Amino acid sequence: MTSLSSKIEAILYLKAQPLSIAKIAEYADCERSEAEAGLLELMADYAHRDGALEVVETPNGYCLQLREAFHDLIQQLIPVDLGVGALRTLAAIALKGSISQTKLVELRGSGAYQHVQELVGLGFVKKRRQADGRSYWLQVTEKFYQYFQVEQLPQPTATAAPTAFAPEEFPSESEPELDAEPAELAELEPSNL
Image (cartoon, rainbow, N blue to C red; front, side, top):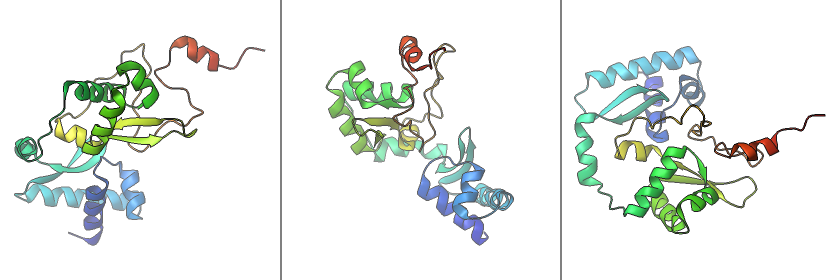
């Protein structure tokens, strides 16, 4: 492997989430075409190895992951004992794509605070403080997808606005929540003059 493909391998390992070619090139400090060539070399190298890891293309980009043949080890070596309430809270976060902790508590009740704390501790959920500092944005992590062997979640219905954000992209305080009611969104529209 060339040093660029080794660098890309390190980037995929450290980021632990799917990355686009553009992001890989940015992190590797190289041209997009060089990143593509390095990635192809890395993928070919992993394809010829008889190892537990592989580099694959997902709908969200390229990632380094455990081969499917070894997924049973996740359950054996990293068992998670989540209660029904925490699982339901995790499901609500996953299905929304990204949700404010305030909205989650409205949906799930005050027990959601403890569920979120537990889920963050287990690495299934990440939270980031909102720009106004009053609450947090919650989103499932790559560990969630790997542990539960989920490649992607069902998309919202055609009438609902999409709520999924890129792994490091959370709405700012000036942006309306995507799952707001139509009446709430109408209030945010500029009035006609």
